[in-house]
Amino acid sequence: MPKIERFGQAAILEPEDWEKLYWHGFQSQKARALFGICRYSGCRISEACQLLRRDVGNKVLTFRRATTKGKIATRQAPIHPHLRKILKGYKPGELWYFPGNEGNFLSPKTADRWLRQACDRVGLQGISTHSFRRTALTEMASAGVPLHVIQSISGHKDLKVLSRYLEVSDADKNAAIEALS
Image 1: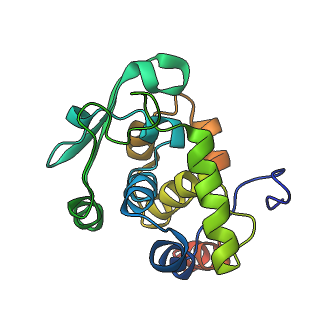
Image 2: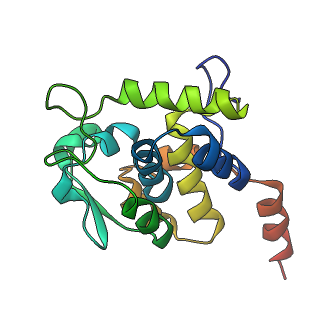
């Protein structure tokens, strides 16, 4: 069921949706960098908002245990070349990569508001902050990345939970049938 009025599952972003949001929806480099991290790492918006400046290296993003859901383990994700280009145009804060008010990190609620405003600007529906995570994980699965690797990047402890994130397209089904000998 697609997300309607903030209920249901977040939509998967089509490449043209990402382009619309990136170039025409988001009004700042901060928003582009924030959602770029979510788009190209599969992290949750809360994890991206709580990144420290030192968590964003030249080659990897580090999502600290204290900021992950369940607070079970720290995980890392390599920085995609597209993300590297996006981050070059952004000047992070001294402590928090995405500083918010009163010396704290950017609130996920603020990020959600930015996204809803951006979607309104470009006429997209069913998109939420979780769409970026679902999109990244689905694209990895569609590209043939083994589930245990996706699980390592996403931080899911259970493959059953991970599988709910992955959307199966008609093209994926056709390719699966064509793979039969």
